[in-house]
Image (cartoon, rainbow, N blue to C red; front, side):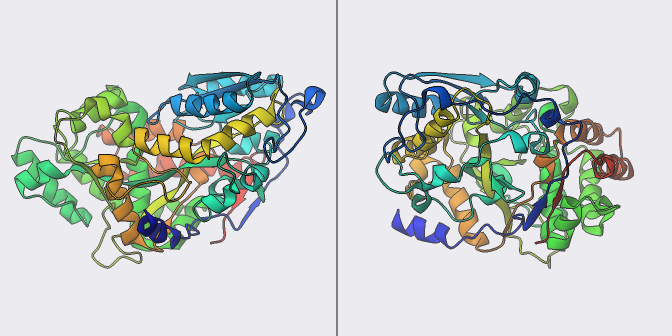
Length: 470
């Protein structure tokens, strides 16, 4: 475990962090509609102390709404139960949701949001619309965990960066997420296949899969943009930081960059060659993923490290789920093949206007305890931002072991980007990508669709803009 901790401590995760995020007035956003601030435990707060760092009231009523995706939501209930042991008179309700924006945006407008939200999933709330309504979370990192150690001293480096906007740390990203290509090591061993390192390799592998009666890829309608993430990761590795910076800063014609076009064209070739399982635009995403993990109709799937837990009930025995970096365009990219996108993910937020912001923070404090974080990694097969808790055998998970190996091989060649989640682009992009993967749109149409979405945001003066400089 100490060796594991040492390897991961060398990673800075600074590539893609915000140097500066400048907010413009939020005219026309949720902020202009919300009730005045002043919620919380102010009327019946407890005394602050090392054991009660946020002044949680003895009889507080706490509500948490958690995205019920690949990681489920009961890991937050596990932490809430820990809170109950320390604050026995509190009432805590933890609820799942797959429609965060639809269910909770009206509550932000009404001034009565929950105390803790996992703002994740395809239907998350764009941070540009709510950032000024969120509590800062620096005090969570400064507090002691349930074992009596300062929380900041127990975490991986730079985990504040993905949740820091305009210099304010307002989203605590809980899971160390590794993005890559996932496959069955046992199936590959059986067929003598290797994970592709370039897009030429990927297309060659697609031909081999087709000859074996299988497909290279599969997709589901809600997860079509997984292929967008894969394409961006590949293009950024090929062209370096400038590709990422132009996209994050909504530059005109950013989607026409040669590196992006090369990946789009490779994917178009895969579509036209019949390397995708047909009908994805009409298939629920977990059903589509089961065609990879259980039926093995497809032999590669792009995703984050949540995929193993999400599909553990629909994965073939002996599958040996394993991750590999995304392919590059050429054999001499600006970032090496081993480079990957990785950052803290699953952003938890504490609205200022909740009935008990202190309660939301206390649940986060519990989640960052050794017991709760270990429970998450063991049951969800993914690392949290709490370092040094995953054993070398990955709790028996080949996917978790491969994530560690991928991070180790990447070294400092780790990057991230925030513009997709920050601007809430996913719903519009899903339409474009489902059309493309279905063969209804070519590379030119995909490029125009993606650029139009970016240009619309760039032209909207009511939308606060990120300014990313490194």
